[in-house]
Length: 372
Image (tube, rainbow, N blue to C red; front, side, top):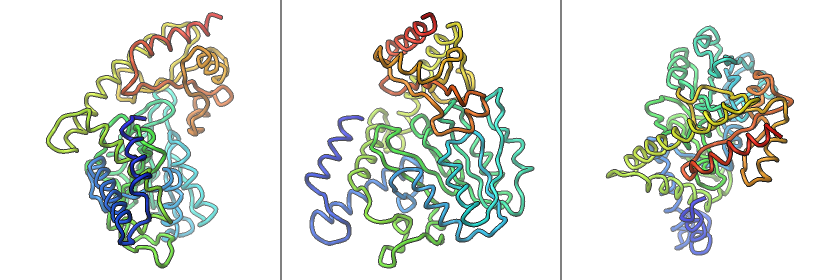
């Protein structure tokens, strides 16, 4: 995490920490900082500040929204999810099968390409479809989905749309107006911030949905979609993370600086992803998963080494100072479809601070494991 993010959270806790709307100086300062955090994410999403909702994490926000929307759905209504998604964007909606008698319908992925079969979506949509939930990018294999087309098809059928942008947000600048979605959520810790979730919701929906809330709590958007006292320091830190990214770019507005920064980061990520992919592909026994490095994807690379458990590979690398993830990353259906549920995937991701030397250490480490 950048030092500036930690320092801004530290400053809040030491000098401004108070509850909201109480009229004394530190409370007024807290109100102002929260407003500024919403403005930062309005720039980050290309929305308005009163469409920004904060929560403990993306999963908690998704469960809260599912429970709320479930109040206006009826037994037999349908929700479409995908095989490619993190289960925070599957099981949150699956809860409505038990709670409200809804039916979950699944859009399949193509195992060979690692992409969703979006051409099959029209045949899944019908007059009972109430919502389509889709990830903008796969946290397991790096696929970037055509979310705009999915949203268009869903809206044409009269359904709402929810986008999980947790893995997408660190790599691409989000534009909810361009996408046209009704809801979109992400997690600040994925892009150099603290552990807190952020959701965009169209204002008219935030003001009309029957959110579970306490009677004295605010009844205006976006606070009516938030429950209890928030982690104010995390909201401040999340805004600082947005400002950190924007500081890497140029432009006359924060949105312009963010766009410039993401363009530069994307170029950096693409070069490193190519280096990882080509390096690992030359090692006997290594199998790479997901879209090819030179197609539309994010900068993570997932792989297996023979039939070795991914945890074994990860431990070998960790003992040599290279830290990578292993397992199913809560995208269990993807791993099942790829046929590696028992083994799991090893996942290495490139970020703004990743160097070519670190990539080479990873490749050398995997090579060392493979030839033991």
